[in-house]
Each structure stands twice: as structure tokens, then as C-alpha cells.
Length: 145
View 1 (spheres, rainbow, N blue to C red):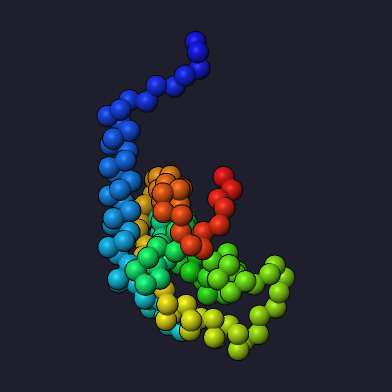
View 2: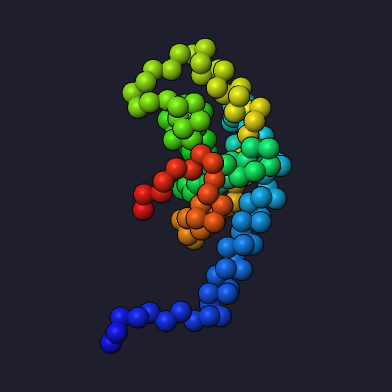
């Protein structure tokens, strides 16, 4: 056998329709999630579980990620342990952040960003990678998978 994998055109069309629909749902959710890191518990109460999240700045997708726990991921963002705030504020590995800087950076993120979370159990990585490849979000960087 030649090792060539044949893709059923109808299945590929269905897959693309699904990916476009999920991306559209993610975009439509963004207006409902302005981050408030001071009262994060109340903000995150309604978004539990695994899924794909998008970060928007002035309506434009600037970061997309997948997670098994959105609440835990937002905790990492709040504590500047996640790659997103480190890229935005150019924080180097091992660099100490003062409380004053933390407050300033959180306020900046609250003012400029909207978060959207789309609950998905299956296909999270595929959707995340497809959106990254297609949209090339500003703060994304390279995907190592």
C-alpha cells in the first residue's frame, strides 16, 4: 500500500463546518465575560469545566487556549503564572513581580480584555490549533505540539 491517506470530502466539509460554528460561538460569547480579578470567584462561578477560551482586545481575538479547568486557568492568569500575561508584559522566567506591578497589570487586563469560554469535552485541542493556524492571534506565540 502506498501510505496515502484518503480523506472523505464530505467528512472534511462537516469538520470545517463544525470548526467554523465553534469559532463563531466563541466570538459571540466574548461580550459576556469582562474579567474582574478582584471578585474573580463570582465571575468564574458560572464557567466551570473543560473547553476552549478566547481573549479579545477591542473585539479582536488576541489569544486562544484550551483547558481542562477554566477556573484554574484564570487563577494562573491572575497570578501571572500563565504565558499570556508574561508575553504581554514581557516578564522573564524567574522575574519577581511586586504587588504594585501586579495591581497595575491586572487593571490593564481588566480594562483591555474580554474573555470567552466555550465548554467542550472533545475536540478542544483541534479547535484551538485550527483557530491559531487560521487567525494567528497577536499574543499566541508558537504552538509546541
